[in-house]
Image 1 (cartoon, rainbow, N blue to C red):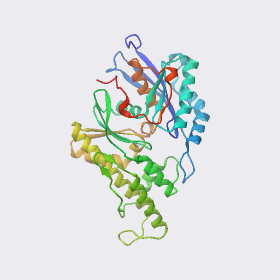
Image 2 (image 1 turned 90 degrees about the vertical axis):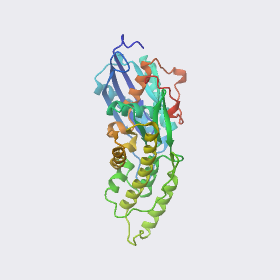
Image 3 (image 1 turned 90 degrees about the horizontal axis):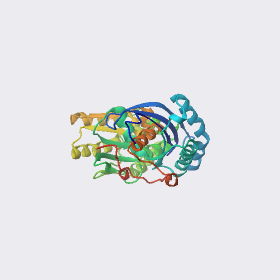
Length: 358
């Protein structure tokens, strides 16, 4: 794309890799990738919330996305106050994520592309989080901690790729928190991880012993979850803590957070030392957690560095991050042909050629 001829570019982004359906519209202005500015025109989201003690099944989540897509799209267009001819491309989450919800939104995005005669751009969900985090916070060359319900990765940029330095070996950190919320039958509204965070603030009388599973640059969370579930059963049966006193769900949530966040801080610090970075950017839904930000901030401060994070508008899955990352790729000439507009549950962050960065 010749940016001198097209100084204003607008993209509509569609996200639906998990239980959040998001549609966002973004504006890029400028004549070069390095100096262009970004403006969020709209960022509308609708969440599928399952009953306490349950998770969200792919078929139910996909049905939710199909049911609400048109409504959310119309709200996004209205909030952005633009017309369809002004849109330059339609961006959608190609993966990773849950198969059925991904497929529902990919088909909807493909439909818009055909109806409106607009180019289509498939976007890596993880890269969307990173680029939106960089745009909002201004972090220039950070080590990225990407923590969500489906992913846990420590990432740094090098030679037009986001390189993965460490990751979860089994379940993601957000999945660990969500599944423990089911064990305690905590509400899923607005989000199980958020409700665990609030409960943890009431705990702290005792730090219960949980496995600390850092293996090189990688982490394992399944064993921690198993032990936390065992302690929850012990608590419900009237069991006592290590000090001989009863412990509460708040103490369990506190202990779980302290343990898993300490693991994340350790591997992030090691990556910072390796690449020589003084910046940490936390992205993904778990990145909203204030205790994680606090612990990461303490580590970064000891190294003379700083932590960058966004609020729930951009941390939690949203359409604007897909619009932004997709438009960055579109500006380098990238498009997804209709016949290749598929989606995949497995799409690694380091598979993407980041042509828009030097």
